[in-house]
Image (cartoon, rainbow, N blue to C red; front, side, top):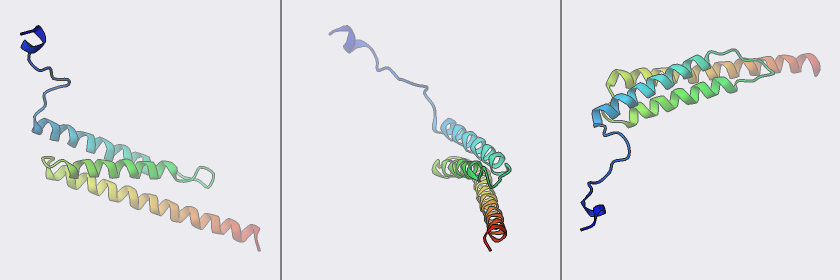
Length: 112
């Protein structure tokens, strides 16, 4: 036998249990949700648009998807991330509505 055949298999990366993976996924989901809610409450204007708000909503939705995709994530984390995602999307839709109203107001002023 050669030396290569006698060596045990090497593991590339940490040996995590499913519980630890679920805990890390839950932490990641909450962090994404919090970052998303912070971004979704940024101010918008006609010049800058609502790109940051939609980015925040996308991050919050990603956190919710992660929490729902990993089976062992705690229930309250799943509920919290889904609620954060809903609030972020609602905020983004409201900002888009407000921007659309301002655009129409400017159109009425300059285009008779």
